[in-house]
Length: 640
Image 1 (cartoon, rainbow, N blue to C red):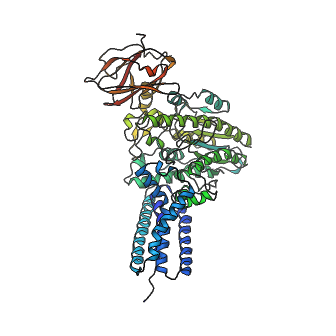
Image 2 (tube, rainbow, N blue to C red; image 1 turned 120 degrees about the vertical axis):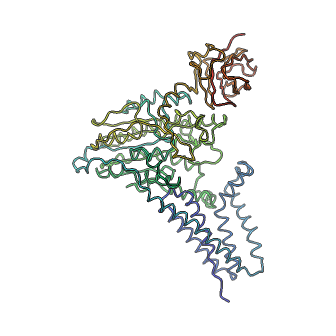
Image 3 (cartoon, rainbow, N blue to C red; image 1 turned 30 degrees about the vertical axis):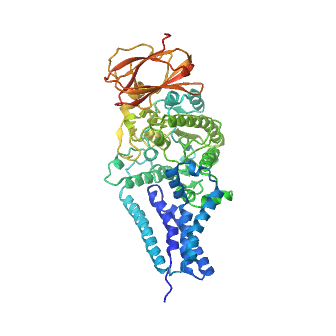
């Protein structure tokens, strides 16, 4: 009887690699698949050869080997399943040695019965061959479909710049740094929501030759959209209107970032492109002339979800995920000045995932303890409607901004000191933060927070269009290319668009709303001089002039000194429910719930301040239920 052919260990080793790649194919290039797939295939083949030489009953040994391979790659998904069923604490205390012991116990529990089984296992091996082949083919087919579909979608055309520059002209070209601080908001928004004073930082940038655009807005609210637009200096209308699946259009966005129109124009004028790692697959520009990154985010994903994570950790070769992300940010900041020393003109791209969550750094750069799942996905998706998480977001974001502001000034000084050429620097947020963002209900979100950004330009020399307060990133490189390469590109209107996280191409133009929203929605109000102590007309409409309109996250009233009064007088829209939270001494002191009434319109309420709230310095007014037409008319603290 011929010996059955067994190849399922090879298939079970390749399947996880192909599966994770297919789930992220829109953000990755096929080149990133080759090394992990070769290692998985080569490693499993060596194990099969070793098992074949060591054991007489090869079909049984190959079954046990496949079990070990499945368990090897299943560690991450199993841990996530346990967390989903029993919570973070169920696995939060396990260290790498314990994980390895549990894996060994599972392997023995599954492998020992197979080893003792006295039956012909040929049908089982054949079945696993077929199942493994089907799973692998499904993943290969999915990857092939997405790869073949994407090239039919041509990126939108961007205008060409000036012809290739002669070598003599290259001598006067500046180095160009494009530093993207992910989620870095505009100074006035950071002041009003996060209590951060940005005047000193703005003055420090101006002293170093920067123009800080005081009314700068983002064009898009998501990183991929924002960077695809800025690096191609065009809007994304053509991509949004393409009759193609979301996945194909997402892949096109990544293609627009990695194969953008800017880099060929710069190379034609003698620039060398230098890119630093971001930890975000979409912005890992490995095709740059010099890329400083190590393992890719995809390789890191495979390590995190397999037994390699605890093994490498025990060997001291692989730090915890949060530590890796923190170290990457600090590593990039430390090495950013290096390319400035080159004699040839360079363009340096650095996308730092900070102050974007997860919040890994304290105000002096010290490590912060990070709980829960850590990743580069948008942290604001877990904040909406949860006041405790919103406060954690505000505190973590604030700390990282304090650190980054101080550190980035040091980096700029080192860049300028190291460079033999003039240096142009674009320092921008791709979008703003998201403590008030509700992706599922954008109408409840404070859009100015998400769509206003830090935007600072250091452009030595003269010529080209002038910078102006409301310039947006779609025009950034139009100005740069005009000034330094004579491109003569016309400026585009500065527009802002919002779209929900799951449907990025359902774009809503909100340009005209932003300033109006910022004027009428004030998340942080200093009581002194605000006019809130003047009662309005009872029964007035919720949106009557003078009322402070509220979104789902409410407003926070800040008092100059502790309040001791026993009474609180407040007028709120009558058909909504609210919650008043009294804060003082760095903690919540007390809270009051106010039920909705039968009629709409402003209703005055006189309330006793809870005794536990004595000495409060902040009062949060939080809508808890209603029709989204929330308003605060006035607030007084009468003596009796």
